[in-house]
Every structure is written in C-alpha cells, then in structure tokens.
Length: 304
Image (tube, rainbow, N blue to C red; front, side, top):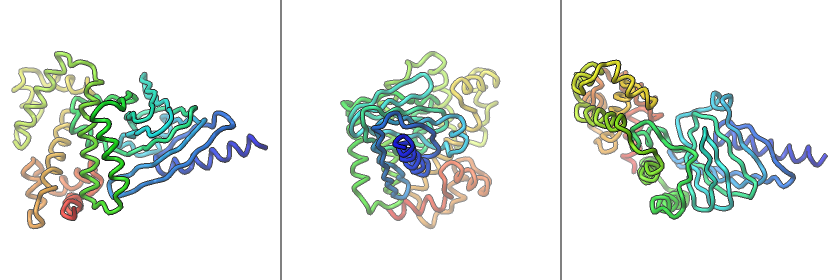
C-alpha cells in the first residue's frame, strides 16, 4: 500500500512536469521521494522551479518525438545536487552551477541528494546566434565561480522578481542570458581544428554578403576556393545545411532590425533588405523560427 501511494505521488508530480517542461518518463527511487513544481511565465520567459529528491527523469526518443524541441533546458542549480546526462556527457551540478540540455535529444536526470533548480526554456535560435559552429556543448557543468555564470543567476533572479516585464523586456532578458552563457560554453568546446577555422571563414563571407541575391552555395564555394560538394560536407560535419544556415542568419538579422523598427516601416521592406523577396515566405519562415509573425515580434519591442 505504501509503495503504491509512493508511486502515485510520483506520477502526479510527473504529470505536472510534462505539462510545464515537455514529455518525460521516470521513476521514484526510494521511499524518500519528494517533488514540487512551480511555473513562472512572463511573455517569452518560461521557467519552472523544481524541488525534487529520490527520483530519476528520462527523456527518451519517444518523449522527444512527442514534444517541442525548439529550445534548450537551461538548468540553474539553486540547492543540493543533481546529475544531468546527455549523450556521453555527465554533469554533476552543485549550488550555483548551470548546464544546458538539448530538448531535441534523449537525456537523463537523477536526484538522490535533494535538489532545487530552475529550468529555463531558452529558444534554440538564441544560442545558435552566439555559437555558430553548430556544436552547443550539453550536460557540461558551468561552475558557479565563473563570472558569466554568476551574472546569469543574477539576471534570472531579477526576471523572476519582476512581475511587470513587457514582451520586449522578456525577449531581451533571454537574449542577455544566451549572450552571457556563450563565452562559458565556448570554453567547454573542443579547440578549433583547421576545418573549423575554414568554416568560420566561410561563415564570415556569408555575413559579409548576406544581403546579396548572389549568395548561393555555388557562389560561396567559388569564392572560398572549393567545390560545392566540399562546401556541403564542411557544413554537414557540424550538423548544418548551407541553405538553412543562410536563411536562419537572414531571419536573425531581420529580428534585430525589427526590434528598433518604427511602426511605419513596412515589414516587407525589412524582409526584402535581408534577402527575402517574397513577403509571404518571409512571414512564414520568421514565424517558424521565432514562434510569432514579424508584426507581432515588432509590437513586443515597441511595448518595451
């Protein structure tokens, strides 16, 4: 009877996790299981404050397929200890540490010493803007003593304590956290190889000509002194597709322009200036990357 009640408590708590954070499975480990969850929503900011002991959460391929994978779980450890695993990496988090978990890949979280943590949903595109080589290190411990980690914790606390954040301010807060964490994440990446440096040069070339109609794989390959096939392989090695990368960079630059655009500035003109000749295609692509239309995105920042 006691074990059944114990499991029922876990299942009820897991239901709350699935609603707030996406699909997970798991199990209570011992009779000492405890779990609580409190959501905090402020426009673009979506986070959960979790207290948990004696439990394991799993996000298998099945759960990934049932969830939105357009973000990273940014885990801020407030108290206790947690073990976060993804792929071949394992991060043992203590108070003040941070780690990233990719929502599009299986992962495992284990809590045996009592833990309190914040799980912030950080949109994928924000990290891609700062870590452009396609390798975002996950389940790597970012230690509490790192200045950027301390600043990120402070910004998180401020955002949680501000009930009156506008949509634009919430978007800016997420961008600031992504910007702060990028240097810390870069330190945990492997040293750049010759191919990485070559890819960085190609990406710089793309940025320099991002507004040009001639920016196509064939032109990029010729300017970079390689075959189109080699160009595709260079990007594929990092899990990237050339055309998709160009489109996302243009969308990111459109988003930057929209944050300061006046109400009278035509949306189609902004899209066109960054390489989107068709407004309907621009609007659809923008909503696919940012979750809202260009017009709604601009309104958020005008209200800030």
